[in-house]
Amino acid sequence: MRAEPPYLQGERAARALRHELGLGFAPVDIWEVVRRREVFVALHDFGETGGDGLYVWRGGEVAGVPLIVVNSVKRPSRQRFTAAHELGHHEMHRFEAADVLIADEKVGTDGDERETAANAFAAYLLAPTEDLRDSVKALGGPPTPAGLVSLMRRYGLSYEALAYRLRNAGLIGQKALDALRAAREGQVARLMKRQGFDEYSIFPPPTEIPEVLSREAMRLFKDRVISEARLAELLQTTIDEALDAVRDAGMERSAEPDFDEEAVKELLG
Amino acid sequence: MEVSGQDIVALSKGPGFVCLDAMVPIHFNRVGRLPLLCEWFGPMVFTANVIMEEEIRGALSRHPENQAIVDSDWLVSVPVDEIEYIELVASLRKRWGSRDDRDRGEAEVVALCRRHGWTAIMDDDVGRSAAKEHAVPRVYMLTTMIAAASCGLIAPQAAWKLHCSIEQTRRRAMLTADECHRSVFMKCIEQFVQVGEKMGDRRWPYILAKRGLDDLVLWTRKNT
Image 1 (cartoon, helix red, strand yellow):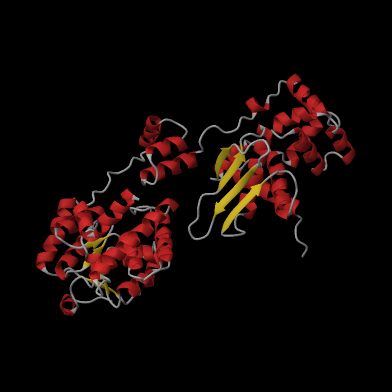
Image 2 (cartoon, each protein chain N blue to C red):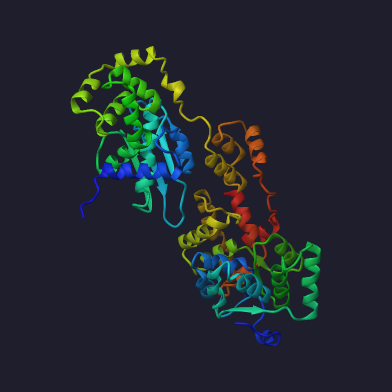
């Protein structure tokens, strides 16, 4: 039997995830999707020239918590695509080895089959073909740069990513793709401004600590693995507020069990 | 294997034997390492009758995996059948406000250890507090694993892995399964080796009856 091409694997996995989460074909808040999959997200400044993100999962007998790290310096549309791409690795590739670490220098660029599949996953998850087809139809004609910018607002993808998405979904031909790509960066920025589209305000990166992360941080605090200060740092708040949160969640530390110093001294001689 | 009260008299007494609270075989079995208890403490490892009948056999419909514990012929369940110790169990349970069969296992383990001089392997706080009051040697399950590693019965990394496997679903021990507690765990093994060296050849399992082993784990956690 011939193996399924990686881009089809990616689309199929994204479709399955949408089905499982009851998302239909509508655009999604990717951060919410990741949260619902109980994957940790961390934003980290890797710099402008740094990689886009990475996916880490420690499997094996002592399973860890899956983690996605996204470069916080990149534009929101890039961050969204990166998060979706890394989620694709989580959905499709986490069982390939006991410990998985996939560092993505530049998502969206097809490398090996795994990367192609993760890109296709991200593209379909953020802009499913079914919805995209309707959106293109609603434009009332072949997509122009202005039309593409209006679609950016709907799907939270970058101009370039969306142009390729239309092509890969079979909604435009190569010639139309080339024409769309010929639009210069300045022109796209002007169109975005004219349409009042500020991606930083429409698609803000997550600022709230995911519940699963704050719960785990509080659990570590309760188990005396981390200090109050470290808890506050993880919850991105003050120590007092962190302790309030711990109290509200009923995660206070129990009294430190007493230990008999005399007995210890005696043992250690 | 169940034995009568009379047979118990014939069994060896003292700190060369241990008596397990229910959680010990249950958790070792859950992670597929039940036979280790026989390797470490065999040929006879004790537990209270009520634990075997009520908490293990009685829970077979919900936990069919307990069958492996029931089938372990090295695990000897012992009744509390002398009036003095029946009274002790009753008084402990009365003080704890226990209803129905709750806490009977812990109370009986304390009574049996008191009667036969065994060491209790027990994590339950109220049971441990009663054991302390009645001068019964007791250790946490975690302390037992550390001690076993310090005596060369299991490799340190394997002991840590075992602890982590158990803690993954349990999350009650003094050390969690988090990576940052690995160094504390290893440090504890080193400390226990020192303790064992002073004991000479009669180290295992007598080390478990040493006063202060659990305290040493807590102390090491605080100071590492």
